[in-house]
Amino acid sequence: MERTCLLLLLLSSLVYSSLGQGGDFSLPASLIVSPDRSQFFEYESVSLSCEVQGNSAGWRVVRNTLRGYLSECNTDWGKQQGSSCIVYLIPSDSGVYWCESGSGEHSNAVKITVHAFLSVSPDRSQFFKYESVSLSCEVQGNSAGWILKRYTVSGERSDCGGNWGKQQGSSCNVSLTPSHSGKYWCESGSGEHSNAVNITVHAGAVILESPALPVTEGDSVTLRCRHQGTPSDLTAVFYKDGSLIRAESSGEMTIPAVSKSDEGFYKCSSSKGESPESWMTVTDAGPSPIPSPSVPVLSMSLPRLLCSLLVGSPYLLVTIILLVKGCRSRTQG
Image 1 (cartoon, rainbow, N blue to C red):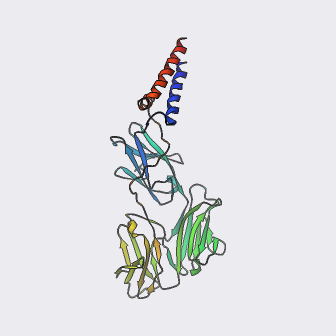
Image 2 (image 1 turned 45 degrees about the horizontal axis):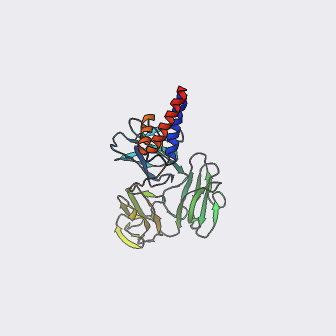
Image 3 (image 1 turned 180 degrees about the vertical axis):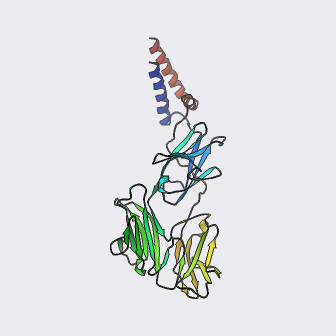
């Protein structure tokens, strides 16, 4: 009977709190995810921070992946930067993340999923006619049913292996012609999409070698003005969004640490001609964290949990006192 009464007390406390009647019950720490979302593409980055009430010493970000591996940030994954853990994501990073103290207290838990990603090799958005590119669908779990698709500038939508491209394992190898210019992506049988990449095939003498895949804030990026053959003069002039940046005698321009302001359309020109324009995407390295609500992980001891609930609501306290009296009278009877 005593055990039944204790269980009844605990159940009533938890139900009362979950219905919002038990006052403010907060966890000792919160896991803040930035950008504030739970789904990412491969090679995107996410910042995970522990916001702690009081002293944050001893708190760290912990995860349990879909494969069942329990580990801390800065071991074989993530990079600790101050109070944050920066993770450059790959599909095996999918799992549940939370903050944990040395004494075993937990924050809320957040599930992060890393989806299929279209990789490009070599990683550039412009090619000369007859060059080759390898496009691969990198998928979390089973890759069966994923197909590389494209939408050309002429309005043709088709799959690799039809009238273009050669399927080799999970990759599609393409010998390029100008008609192959367009948008490429991976798609599953159920209609899920990966990121999309724009590829331009140029029949002229000059192209701009710029990354087709997004770059992360703080990365060093080099843009190269490339010529067919070996020109006697390598000097190139670089433009962003139609405006002159500068001329470089080496034919390449390096941005030591890219920022969001560097995102835009780039092109180059030389004595041999002008390249097409290509868009360079810059992803966020981790802005100011924005709290995201999620289901808390309760790891408090029973006495501490009950005390937190009782202090928050005198009405709950009266209810529990009445329950205790009822239990005692039944036990004594």
